[in-house]
Image (cartoon, rainbow, N blue to C red; front, side, top):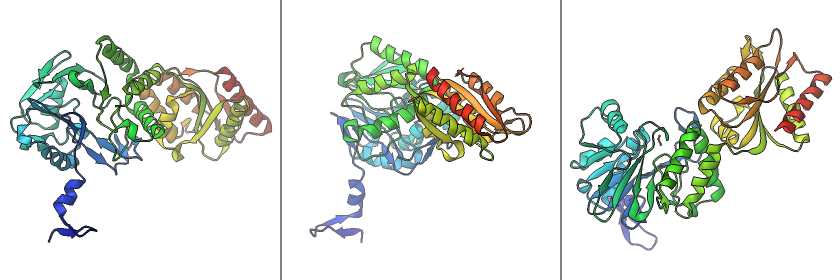
Length: 416
Ligand code: FEO
């Protein structure tokens, strides 16, 4: 029982087969990835962020005079992580568990780890301590609060801590290992990308940067000014960063500056001369307007993409907006307001506060109208500049009105 024959006849046990899928990966000498790959997760953050490529929960084990686990994994993957740790050390030898961020995809397995690592001291910010002990686990674990500039000596290595509030939660923190030039920034610089590979140079670069951009747009965009300050702070501290190992996706080892530069571009609102036309329609009139506007933009030689909201993936649309300069939003009027799909999208924009975008509104109505006014108000609340007065059509656009929609698109394209 419990045995299989290999093709060449040698017998291997089920536990050996199981272990063969669970090897830790040595990312630097005596520093190991011991996290987990979640191939099947398709949504994050309450179905606001689609993850068609899955994700990883990265945890790192540092073996020095002291043994440290940096971050954990989502609770259902705790057993996998423990198996990987056991391949390297007995868990009871762990001295510290650094929790860079409370959110459950990184701290969920902490209680499980502490069962097997009873002498381990948990390390995190004051807000992390409050979150973990008072609001997540309701325990009184041995906890060491750290703040920016604090250090823990491990023997050959020293851990340095850098608070990173709102990147992307108030408790967030980066851990830096000076000897190796290793930055462990938790969520920052991550990607939702499940892969058997652990490093940036082992995966398709276009897919990697696409997922990194989508991650930035959906997770970090509202905190762009803090992103810029934090990267400047890292530069002012003269930290030598040879490797950035985030808590999701692959590790930036070949050129960590690439993701730092990309974050600075996104945070500064640098965008392409591209326009998104986002709309929903009741009986097709607003759609006719949208398509005429798209044709006008196209005639001006500006790149344009059209999205009907219920048919479009929210997370992917937000990612498209990250690098587009212009946004045209259209809705039919219903009950003097906008269609609910548009309302949801505009609510997102208010939270994301996209930088340096310009926009305009359009839509058809039957009686008194109201959608365009509604859209413009929401765009202003999102901090987006209204570039042109809104365009409305009563009932179905006739030939003359269709021509006006086309010219509206042309004019908007010229203005950006
Ligand atoms: Fe990946 Fe904020 O959790």
